[in-house]
Amino acid sequence: MVMRLTGEEAAHTDAGRSYVGMLDTSAGREMAEHVAAQWPHARVHFVLRKWQLWTWMNAASVNAPAVGRQVVVLGAGWSATGIDWAHHCADAHVWEVDLHHQADKEALVRGLFPLVAGRMRMIEADLSSLGMVLSGLRAGGWRADRPTLWVAEGVAYYLAPDRFAALLRAALTFHPANRAVVEFGLAHHLLREDVRTRTAAYHGYLAAQIGLAALQTVDPSDFCLRSGAIPLSWADPSSMELARNGRTLTFKSPEDSGMRMAVLGPA
Image (tube, rainbow, N blue to C red; front, top):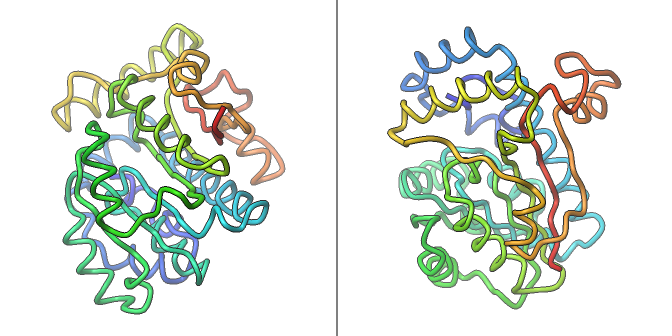
């Protein structure tokens, strides 16, 4: 659904766009059409979060080049993020982790980009099992003693907050230079009433489609305490629009949306 809604803007390099063009998004057509009709701001959310992820990944790599040479994408799914990064940084190695589709994705990437595929590993693991994730990464050649940039786009919605906090705590503990770029939904008690209602309806629809009781939301202060992370940068859709377009178009203030993004570092 996300790939269908964002189209070419789901990727940032020519290789990423070529990859996206090869995907069959027909399975998400009906869901994407419904979401676009009921929540027209959803597509803008997706495009902005992908732009913000890329902006922060670039900034982390420029400020500390070693951090961008090991990139772990959690909950990668069919996203083009890892492919984009492998093409963007010729000396980077990328590990993508998710519960489903990674073997099929690896086969597709090897067929499309054989040279880059040699620096990518797709790992099938349950993100709620920290041990499974870490053993899969280590078996795939990831080095815990080297700086790593961790990317968690949308993962917070599907993991229980304590599991997500444990995952990020581990990610940021291994090396003092490690960084995590994350996206999450604010806890309902922090939202304006109209945004709370709209978000609950949207999350309820998505949860029903994928068989979950509900999508998770996060209180940032509580999460940072539980994960041992320090927030280094924050963004909301209005600030992303302003940075990207020079003006706000869909979101006039941070209170207009429950979506937030952050760069986290170890305490």
